[in-house]
Length: 138
Image 1 (cartoon, rainbow, N blue to C red):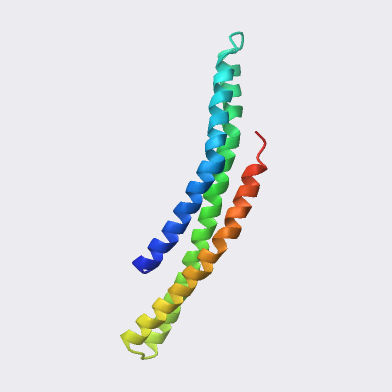
Image 2 (cartoon, rainbow, N blue to C red):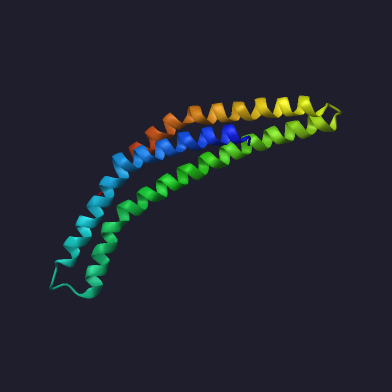
């Protein structure tokens, strides 16, 4: 993918992840640490019970991180498939005898469309992630 297109996608994704981290993940981290500290205050519990308690505290955050990672992987896979399709079209055009400038122009246009389409998916992906993060039991 051309550097400008890649930088655009990366910027939009980083912005989304930062907002999710600030508005959702960070609060979950705070609850996890408070919960874990409370587990350590149970002086009559065994070491195993305290560890089990701490593990329970970490579960919601681990689920949240898994959700975000999974969603980003799916997004990246879809974008990669789209750009691979562009590569195939460019190769077919080149193999049929078209000149390099025409192939480059097709490739640039095709990849640009992929990026536009996928950047336009980010708001709905963000809403879905927020809804899923909000539904994780604390």
